Image (cartoon, rainbow, N blue to C red; front, side, top):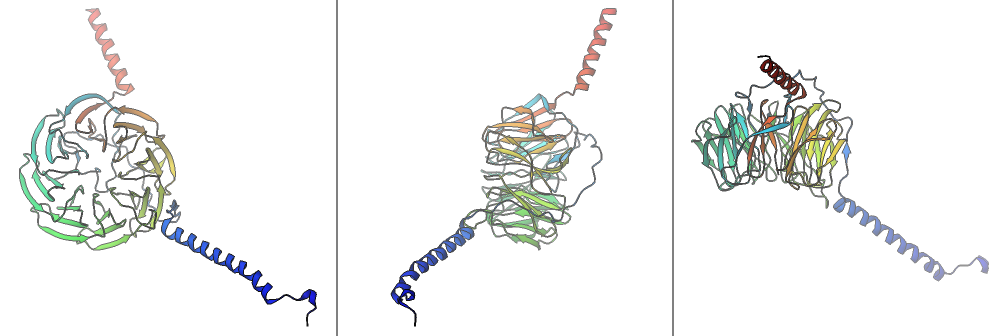
Length: 447
């Protein structure tokens, strides 16, 4: 029997235990709250897998100067991989050659170019063909009342999709006459791509279409988990795209069968963001932006997440991807946070960033050693040194997708006007011109 000094009543034992029990309940509740927060509220952070597959590519040979009157920039993004990079050695735009502003409609997407002719559609649904050398209209055709995409050129045909009404068109590139058109059950703003006589694009009800380019016969369809508003990229027999359910998918181009599909959850509340960004495929990776603020890189063969990098705001823009001096493989992309980024293509780390002063909605273009972007916030267009991010060219107009080029001229899209520019004269060219003038003066005085 315990002594009185050691005795503790059952009442005292209960009084001492209930605060502990209450504290335990509080701790359990707090832990549950933290778990709920982590599951439903917390946004994902940056991620990089150093072991993710990455294909190094040999250094490309020195670029050959394109022949401008036969040169082709046939789709939004230039190549089937939509890398948006032209290796031509061209100084930034200099003298303005011409302007074209027929139709008075907003131009969200830049034109495509083939054999000296530019093709584009404005938001009010007017399609135009414009002489690239003179800026004169070749033809115009009304194809709808609302369009927000870029055409595709292939074998003297121009392919376009419309939001209102939902349709896909094939026009004769020479005169704009309709070769075939197909009505769609929903709207489309997915800039088409043509590969092996097949035109591919997505639509707002999540359907991806493959039509035979020659006659419009439907080849196959695939139903994604959300709206497919972006264009599809193509590489090694596969098509790649993101959708509004937050998934990125690879399909076999020949039959539409799924190779892989990977979901994302970079937004808060454990939700996925939406992919409006058209992907670029390079180095064995798929690169694209999302409204959850992240730029993503997936392994092209498997869909494995290689890295994601947060910008802090929507990333609607498509990326431009290239190997550049001093940086190596790099991804260039703008964000609604008002910054333009150069990211390491392997790891996603920031190589440099440039403060644009306003949100960036459209995709950039690399021409030689300069990357061009337009700012929706500032309504201007800039050219940055790809190695450092230093601005070396500026134009006081622009909004969405800026420049394409053909080796001899630049073509700049602003809100409602298309501009043709000659490249700025290089120092060597200026010195040569000055020497020629000096010789001419000397000859004149000696007579």
